[in-house]
Image 1 (cartoon, rainbow, N blue to C red):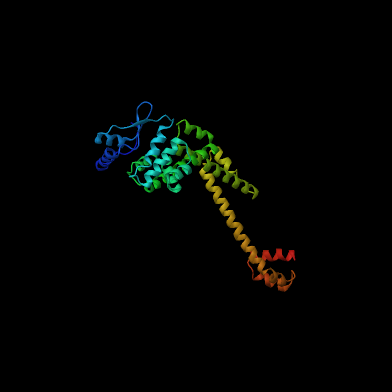
Image 2: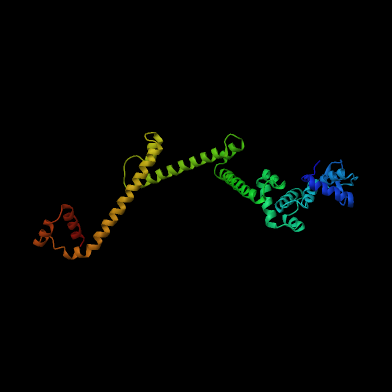
Length: 295
């Protein structure tokens, strides 16, 4: 028996039996070519209760599941959510578009699209909606969460395929989980970033005239760890940035007073010059000497 319609409760079944007894069976019960019941389980039960000989017809098409789901949409006791889910299930079997089914069954395309999301991303919940155990909107939220998780997993797979095919292969072979492979990739990328920062710092140290061996060389030789080399590189770059900033500030401050200083610098060897120099620190006297030479 393939008929997926829910059996009516006793009161509804007795009402249907009375209707069949007085008015006859209006719609034939559908069997497949092997005699398996496809549609009409409630009508068959009602015929037995009414003592009426049922009328059968044989389905000769090639898509019995689509027939079952399509017929179930018209059950009068189904909610709109159930109807939408049954229609979405029928679409998955028949290959018809959601738009066509929505029009033919008088259903909202939005509701039908919602049912299709649940069917695609949470099929176990879709069956709950079909039988009326849970409302469509409640299971839609769970389906969206499942959809997001699937999208996140696919994003990770795409990232592995692009950035680490060897790890992607290990995942496909079952030697690594997806999360383990992503963690390994991120560790690789972090090591690459660290080594680049060390190399960049070594280039600055060389350009600044430092004689010690490059930090990368010390790490390669095992004299220090890569983490130690990275820490020293960060410290050098930070100190260098501080020195540049402080020196620039000092130069800018001196430049602000340069006009006044230049106008007051006396000729070397004069008494005025000696008195200027007498009240200055050695560093300031040295600066005066250089500035005098420049002017």
